[in-house]
Structures are given as C-alpha cells and as structure tokens.
Length: 397
Ligand code: ADP
Ligand code: MG
Image 1 (cartoon, rainbow, N blue to C red):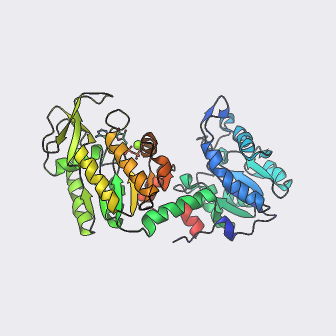
Image 2: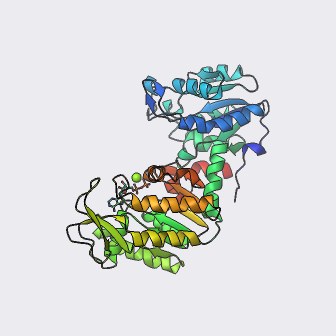
Image 3: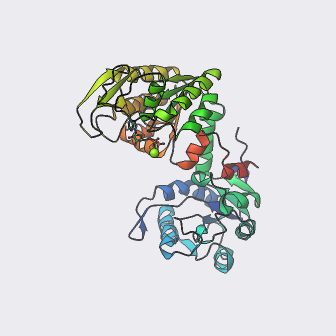
C-alpha cells in the first residue's frame, strides 16, 4: 500500500533538503499563539538534522494572493521554529532568487533555514512549472510533510515533487499510514460513523465509504433526513427534505455493495437549540411536531457501542448530535469513549477527522486514545471522499 518513499529511503547527508511543511499557525500580536503545527514538524526536521542534511523549510502562510504582505511573513514562525528546535533558524526574505540562494548556500550540514511565505508568489497556487524549477534549484531533495495541503495542486506541493527526489516527511508518513490502515487495506469488519448537520455536505463521503465499509452508522442532523426518507415524521428537526430521494439512493447503493446503513432507533428531542434546554428521549416514530432531535438516545448509544465492539476498524467523521451544547453531547461522548476504550484495548483501529469532529472527540476526552486523529481538515475530507490528493500522488509518482 505504501508506494511513497520516506526519509529512511533517501540519502540526505550533506544534501540540501527542501521540506514543505504546513506552518500556517494562528498568530496574535505578531507571534504564533498556538505552536501545534510547528511542534508537529519538529520530528522531521530533527531526523534530517541527525542525518547530516541542510534543512530548508518551505511553507505557505495565510492568503496573500501572490503579493508581499508583511503581516503574512514567516519570519516570526522561523523564530518560533528555532525555539522549538533549540537552535538558530536562518531566514531568507524571499522564497526563491538571491536571498534564498545566499542563505541556503551558506548552510552547513545540520543547519536549518526557512524561506519566506511561498504564497507571496502568485505562481505557487497556479502550480507554475517555471516557479517549481526555481524552487527545485534551491535544494537537492524534496520532503513533503504537509498532508493538510496535499489536496491542492500547488507548485510547492505538486510540481516541485516531480523535479527532485521526493519523500514523505514523518507527519505525512504517519497520516498516510493511518489512513491506509483505515481504508486502504483495513481489517474487517469496518464501520464508518458519519454524522454532522447535513447530508448535502457529505454525499461524496457516503458514496465512497459505502463501497469500502461494512456499515455506515449515521448520526447528527443528517440522520433526520434518512429517517424522513423512511417515512418518519421528524417534527421540527433539522432535515433536508429535498434530499430524501438522494438518501434513499445512498441506502440502496450501499446495500448493493453489502454495506448496511445504520440509523438511530431513539433520539433526544428539545424545543430549543440551546444549552440545558428541556429535553426528553423518544422513539424515532414519536418525535413531537414542535420538537427537534438534537442527539441520539440511550438505545441508539447501546446499539452503536455493541456494533463498534464487533468491528476491527473505524473511520469517523461528524458528531452524533449538537455536541457543542450540553446535554446534547451525550451520544457523541459515549460513542467516542467506547471507540477510545476499544482502541486502547487493542481490538479497534480508529481514525477520525473533520473540523467539528476533532473538537467533539477532544470534548469527549477520547482524542488521545484514538489510533489517529487527522487535523488536516479539507485534505482529510477529500481523502474519505475517495479523491486523489495531488500532493500525495506526486510523491507516489
Ligand atoms: P465536521 O466539521 O467534523 O465535518 P460537520 O460540520 O459535518 O462535522 O457537523 C458538525 C455540526 O453538526 C455541529 O455544528 C453540530 O452542532 C451539528 N449537528 C449535529 N447533530 C445535529 C442535530 N441533530 N441537529 C442540528 N445540528 C446538528
Ligand atoms: Mg464542520
């Protein structure tokens, strides 16, 4: 499955290694306010240092749209990277050209430098070949550690990878291995949890997963659309009635691939979408006309837990309910904790991703025990939609 090379396959000693990282960190008062993305790049940089490479870090920051925007300079990020590594990180005031050349030509083995924001050049997002050649002329080897930007074919993620010997960095490698283990060649039975607000945003996710997994457990607002499509009255719940045909098609197509679509059997309903709103548990055939289903009920939680206990692999995107407002976080918490327990016990490989999903699993206190939680956002979604990620394809190519 792993057709990509890693740092272990490359001879980097004495070489200039261009590392494409995602250092698009949040800033406050001119300094990174959260260093997670910097810290996650450190293992790759350290590995390369220990192999005697000259490490040249390349990243985008914000959306400067091809202009030099001083507030979007990577200089403060280079300083923070220096702190994280405990060493001096040189900074080139341009991504290519004289400044990049003179800074990188002066490097010794084991040195680290960072180039200015690659998106200061409009050619970056155009995947421009000549620009990629200019980038390639700075280094001898290319390492991509930015899975989160791999769904975009940009010069520093796609064209550049085809111009130099290319490998995945440690973070990219971890992500590809985790995702490969979950959907590439997974241990069966495989369950997917797909929740969240709307079916319309998850059509491609459902379509791809239904070909690959044994069951899709549907939660969240989108479950209401499936229930409605089955002829249930969902009261005042969030429901995309115009998607009922699509929902029925998904169920039929899934069945043709031997994939079961699992829906809630009971729900927690309330009159308001608000924390602490008065609520009650009802069967799915008894949702009052003036109430909304905001979470799965206890019988559904039990069903989900029993199903997960029989599975070997789990892919999760989307919460089971309105987890941001208590007590409608109960279903998501219980299912997440069950998956975390099973993973810890060694019987389940669990991979999750999605903006709200990452927040929901952290809220449930389950994040640390999942096999892998992808923070890649859009790239993770495109991956579960079954799309080819240009930045990954270029490494395999
Ligand atoms: P992700 O960002 O992980 O892909 P989504 O954006 O698809 O997840 O879904 C998250 C949103 O779905 C949350 O804001 C949550 O409040 C909402 N949601 C979940 N269940 C319900 C529900 N029953 N009714 C209304 N909104 C819901
Ligand atoms: Mg979301």
